[in-house]
Image 1 (cartoon, rainbow, N blue to C red):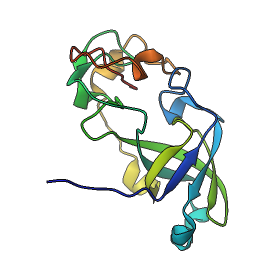
Image 2 (image 1 turned 30 degrees about the vertical axis):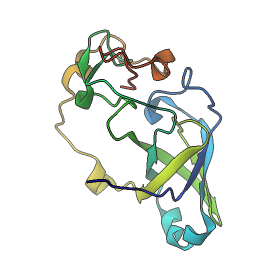
Image 3 (image 1 turned 180 degrees about the vertical axis):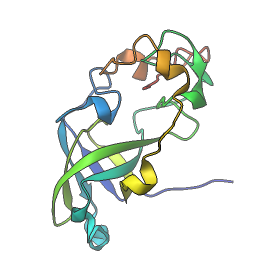
Length: 171
């Protein structure tokens, strides 16, 4: 089965290279950007201004290949791909929670960006704390990761996949 997605817009950020980009939106602070939703879809943005945060789903457009084991930024041990948020995935789909600062027509001003400039946007969903915040969660290996506070990505994003786990990771 093949599934095809068509981008609904483009995410604009100050980050042009993977190295130095925040590895998660929680580490992005006040890094600002915009979401340009294609004009034909702008009507779908109605009522979004009432939300302080939104979920952006996007395509890791500069990621290629994957390894089923990788060394995440937060750790020095190799982990299973699906126990990380590595951009190099069989389906390179990213998700970020960002602060919505405002809307002008089909443009959303956002803060907390952790994606590269020109990232194709697949979908927007409102962040709703009743649905998206859980208590009593376990954070697996990340709870004891030696580099869990590392804020930015390094060159793992662009390191060629050797199939031995040296692939890119962002958690």
